[in-house]
Length: 426
Image (tube, rainbow, N blue to C red; front, side, top):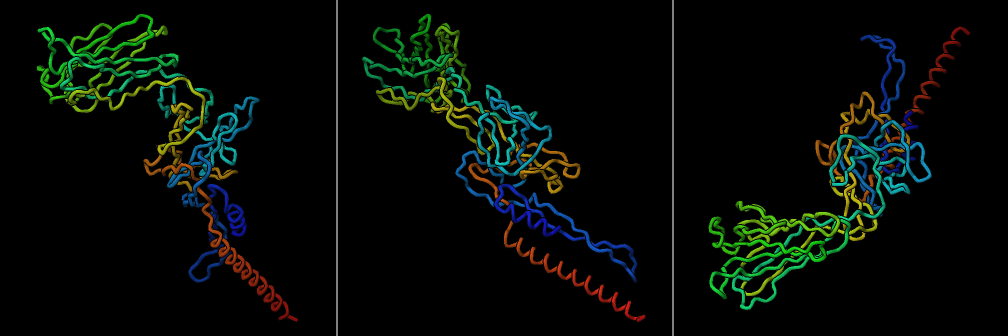
C-alpha cells in the first residue's frame, strides 16, 4: 500500500493541483493484556494532504488561476456535447485545485482534466447572483451598445473674463441608445446685469444642446459661485447653487459637499435618453470651479457610453470577477469565481483528474469570496503545482523497501524455527 501511494505520487509529481497521499501504519492486536499481548500484524492507512499547499508557478496562459491558501474551485464534468458546442453536465459536483483553465469552442472555461469551472453569474446590469453555482459561459458575440448616461466635467471658469468674452464651451462625444456617436455641447455665457453692458459677478449660464435630436432644444440653468449664492454661502470659486432651470433640464439642490449635477433629457429618435452632467460637489474644488483669471480651462470631460464592439478576450480579476473585454476597451462582467471550503478537506473523496467530491466526513461545501472567511486568494496567470517532493518520495520508498525486506526475514526465521521444532522428535 505504501509503495502504491509512493508510485502514484511520483507519477503525478508534475500534475497541476495534485495532492500527494501519505501512508501511515496501524498496529493490529488480536488479544490484549498487560503480560501477554498478541499482535495480529499491521494495517496500512492512507492519509490525504489536500490542505498542504503546492508550489505556485507563473504561466503563459492568462486564464490560469491558482489558489494560494485554503479552498477549491467548483467544477463539473461534461457528459455530452451538442454540435454547436453546448454541454450537458454530470449531476455530481466536483472540486479541484487544478486551475489551468482555457476557453473551449463553446465558451466554457475548462481545465486540463476536462472539468468546467462553475461560479456566480452576472446579469446584464452587472448584478451578481450568489444563490446558485452555474457553469461559466463566455459569450463571444459583439457587445451591446451602452447609451451615455453620465458626463463628468472638470473645468475652471475665469473669475475675471475679458470683454468681449471669447467662446467658452465644451463638447463631448456621446452614444445614443443604439450606439451612434453624437455631440453634446456645454456652452457657458455670462448673465447680463440690470444695467446695459454689465454682467452679474460669479454667475454663469450653462446651455446644453444636443445636435441631431428630433426636436432641437436649448436647455439652460444658472450656476452661482461663492458669495453670489447668498442663501448657500460656500468658499469663493466653488458651486453654491443652481437656479432658473429650463424645461427638460433639472438640477440638484444645495447640500454641503453633495453632488452638483444637472440632468438633461434628449431624444435622437429612439426615445428619451437621460444624461446626467456631473459638475462636482457644492462648496468643493472637485469638478467645476471659477478660480481662473481670464481663460476657460478644461481638465477633463468624460462619458460612460460606448458603441457595439467585437469581442477581444476574457480576463480574471483578483476578487474572482470574470470580464469579457471588447476591442473598444469596454468590459462586461460575466460572473465571479468563489472559493469552496470544507471543515475537513482531507476527508474528501478522490475522483479522476485531480478532483474531489464531498463526503459526510468532509462536511458541507461552504461558498465564499476569495480572501474571506479563511479562504485563499487568487493568483492570476499562475497554476498550483503538485505538492509532491520527489526527494522525500524516494526516501520513503527506500524506507518502505527496507521495512518490507525486514518483515520477510521474520517469515524466514519463523519458518526455520518451525523446522527446528519438527526436528526435535526426529
